[in-house]
Image 1 (spheres, rainbow, N blue to C red):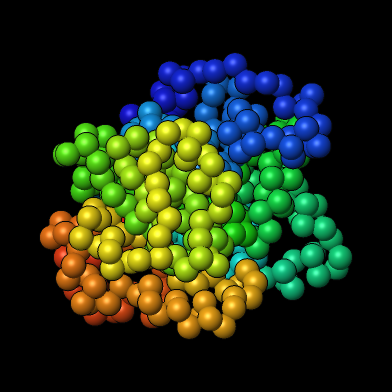
Image 2: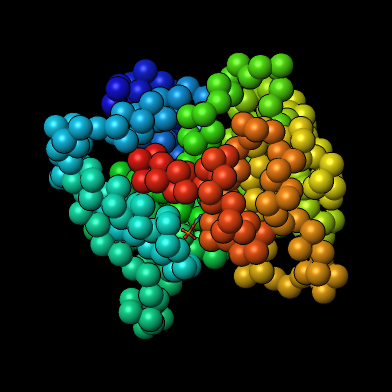
Length: 348
Ligand code: CP
């Protein structure tokens, strides 16, 4: 399979982005924005939100990633020719280990040369250039811009400018503020579908708990939106009240008919869970009350707690971790977060 055949199969008529104004685009829901962020032949040009993805596209993407993950030397050499005439720019102004490295290696594995800006002090931002101008420069110079930044609105504006100006540059969101991290959700889901038949789960229901700071976690939000593509998955949001999942997301789940619940009782949920996704506290996005900081220790997945999970449950964490996921759990065969890191390079 190739992305070209997929794009041809899913050809859609898109609205002309050159006639759209920024206030119109800015006011749209992520799903509506997604209709404007495609190439004329229907493939995604700018991936900003998990809501832009559908089951058909995911099945195709995971099959392709699996093919490349298991490639022999001959296939790996072929893959290295695919983007050999293309160039990319990694614009990462927030810290990253996994996302940056896996995108950089994935670019090289497909033959694409890549430049990077990670330190604003070493770019023309230092001389007072706006971030939009910096990004438009990268769009002029490269075929793809992969970016991570602390403010989600920047990628929205950049994607609008690229589409509105008729540029062909591809954009990929590598994490935008506390809003979205769609490629992280892709690697978590890729790991889950590699171990479970999510579309046909036995007993008709599969429970995934997302635990921790859900209010400010872009990885929690992006995965929840992707899981919503599987109607048999029940989502359980386990967090102290102050850090619970936002209503915008639970309203969306209601709209699309997905079963979900909010709770602060982690122990009560463990025996029913098929997968558990742990989160660190996202304290780079604001203050947390002293009481919630103290209570956060109640949301750790200790080895005693892991013993209460089903024998075939899956433990995930986007990493980096803190004390919510002790290193001792790495030896548990249900711990799949390191495998997920590996899959990240292929799905990216
Ligand atoms: N999960 C994740 O985004 O990791 P990095 O911050 O290291 O990229």
